[in-house]
Image 1 (tube, each protein chain N blue to C red):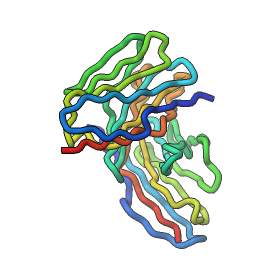
Image 2: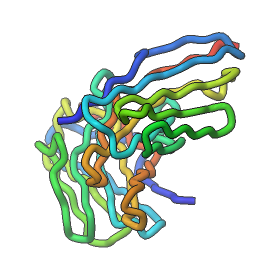
Image 3: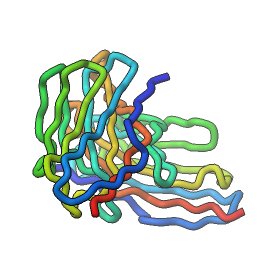
Length: 115
Length: 111
């Protein structure tokens, strides 16, 4: 089974702090994604990566950056956390093995509260 | 850009009843993915539809993609409390590997 793990289930940070959210997958997937999920807005893509050291902006990249130094790990960084970044953050991974199927496998999520 | 609209937004049914959730796309779908999410947790992949008219079933859940590949339905037969959660449809509009998601349908099943 594909396993995607996230470093924390719950996190509370202060405004202005630098925040790191870590995601690790164990299935050698090429693609990794970071989403945030908010009531009424659904899942929104923040950043994604098709390969090591590669990254592309999603729909809402402002205020975030990412790092992918190893294939299995994709980090989301909030350079200076703000209260409007309080949200549920979900990491996902998928494979290129079958070009017609892009099932994404999700981690359990990190609920971040910025006070 | 492509948008996915789900209906209804929420649903409360009595245990044992059947129900249907719909997902409509503004553009032709290359692939339609159904996920389930328990409150406060990650998404669990249910099934993927690709061809017009395709239908797939898993236990008591059946998903269909219409011939025009712009609408999908998820049907649950004889609902159980374990079916409760948020159901989301996702779509890859351009064979890019990126998915966009509908806003989700919250299902409650009353014992």
